[in-house]
Image 1: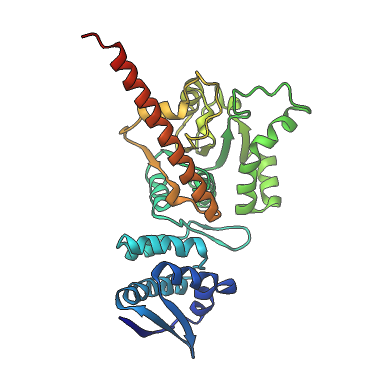
Image 2: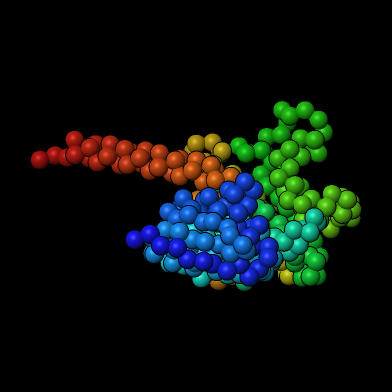
Length: 336
């Protein structure tokens, strides 16, 4: 039976945040909950089946509370809140309100999914954390934000960011230019994250003083890194030898975060990924945290999430085909 109910807007900003640009936010809620939402004299009128209206009220209460705490609403955050609502976990939305740091432009950096929240907790509570997941899950961005926070709190005296300079083994010789010009394109994502957190001018000063270091992984060999926050990015493209070398650089008062996407390994076919091996070997070791982020944690354009799901589906089918072929081979070779 179709019914309607009024929802009172207490937080003045909530009306603007709820509807969004060209009503895109409210349209998303309407289509997902199969209701109509009408703005009338400072209140929201909800029209639809009783069950759907009750779900919408639960969602509105949580969203209004997050807006009152200074958080903005967008399609991604509302989509995630809707998914929590469907799982009966809408009360967990409040867990995403913790601010990691306020960046250079005054924007609060916060976890946007429960997976990201768990990732942040692991980084806080462990000396080494492995953050593994697909593109767009905020692995590097959140790690850099945690590094900047630790630096601002004087918990560390340096930030060191590193990654394999060239995906298939760091062969830089064929590239034009001097060494800096060869490696900078591969380190650009790390620079971008730093610029957003601190501003280009401040990053430049810190780089000159050696307080921040951005370097290819090969430059870490033979060093001991004390009182530092170290991030190894794109770790899926490290060899087992490189990974062991990196992990054993950790000195006193230091913290390391290792990030990577095991679905995008660019090493030669017969080469084992150091990330995959390390995650397996170090599982359960005290002081080392591990998290596997999924497509649910993607915070880029919603199309990225759909692309990742499509690739996962394709890869699963390919694995099934290989297994079926393997089983057929066993059957053919069986002697009676």
